[in-house]
Every structure is written in C-alpha cells, then in structure tokens.
Length: 61
Image (cartoon, rainbow, N blue to C red; front, side, top):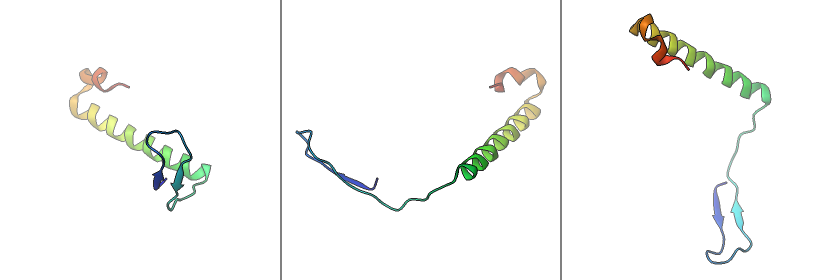
C-alpha cells in the first residue's frame, strides 16, 4: 500500500493508493529462503570455530 486516506474520527470508507509491486513465484521465495538458511548456517559455523567448541552452547539455536 502506498497511501491511505480515511476519516480520523469515524469508521468510514477508506481510500487506498497502491504502488508498484513485484510478484514472486513460490519457487523463487523458497530459493531465497534456502539461501538465507545457508547463510545463517555459515555464520553460525564461523562463530563456533572462532570461539571454540566450549562456547558452542552460546550460539546454539
């Protein structure tokens, strides 16, 4: 939603103005989600390696 006009005191009719939007397929969304999961795992492994195994519990999620 880009903009919205409505009465302040009354629950009346709203006017909304829609802006540009991008449509994604489910496959594109899942690919982005998997990429983010992999990046989080990489960061997790880097943190554990730099802090040692004894601090593993601090970064476990």
